[in-house]
Amino acid sequence: MVTHASPLDLIVGAGAGVVAGWVNAVAGGGSLILYPALVGLGLPSVAANVTNSVALWPGYAGNIVGLGPIVRDNAFEIRRLTIPAVVGATAGCIVLLITPGRAFDVLVPFLVIAASLLLAAQPRLKDAVSVEHGQHPSTLLITTGLAAVYGGYFGGGLGVILLAVLGLTLGSGLRVANAIKGGLSLLINSVSVLIFALFGPVNWLLVAAIAPASLAGGLIGGRFAARIDERALRFVVVSFGLAVGVWLGIGAMGRTA
Image (cartoon, rainbow, N blue to C red):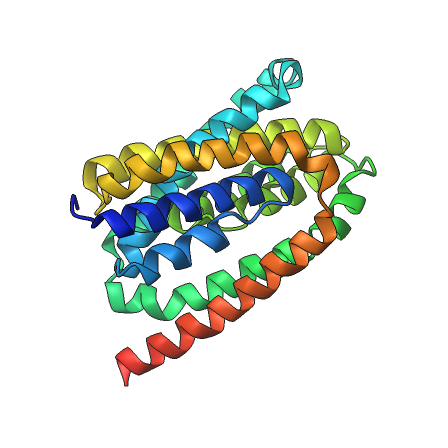
C-alpha cells in the first residue's frame, strides 16, 4: 500500500483523471491517458497499473447507470459469464502481482501499443459486431475468460476486446453486446479493485483525487459526446498511446541495459 503524493501530484493526477474519464465516455481508451500520467508522476509500472485500475472503477459503475434498462434486460447473459469473468480476472491480477517489476516493464510497452491498435480498429470491430453472427457458447465462455485475464493483468483496451468477443460469439447485435460488455467490464474491474486493494501497491491518495475526477470527466464526456468528433479524438488517443508505448519501451531498454 502506498500513501504518499505531493499536492502537485494530486492536481496532475486529478487532471489526468478528468481527461481519462472524458475519453472513456466518448471513444474509449482512458487508461492510455491515465497510466502514462501515473508513470510520469514517478510510480513504478505495477503500482501505476493497479492505481489506474482502482481509480477508474467509478467510470465503469457510471457506465452501467448510463446504459439503463438494457443491462437489466440482459442480466441472464451477464450472470452466465460471471464465472469465467471472475476466474479470469482473478488469474490476471495474481499473475500481475507475482510478476517481477522488470518483467512487467518489458511487457507493458507492447500492451500499450496493442491496446492503442485495438482502439484504432474499434470502428471496424463495431461494424463486424453490428451484424448478427451464429452463437458459439463454448467459444464465448473461453474467450470471455481470456479477456478477463487480460483485464485483470492490464486492462487497457478491455472494452474493445470484450465487444469483439461478445459480438462474434454471442450471436447478438451491437446494442446487446455493448450492454453485456458494460456489465462484464464492471465485474472484471471490481474483482481487480478488491484484489489490488488487499494485496496491491495502490496509491490511495492519488485514487482519492483521480476517482471523482474521472467520474466527472465521464459525465462531461457523456453529456457532450454528440458534439465531439469521435474519429478525431480516437486518432489523438491512438497516436498518444503509440508514442507512450515507444517511450515506455525505450525506458525499459535503458533500465535493462
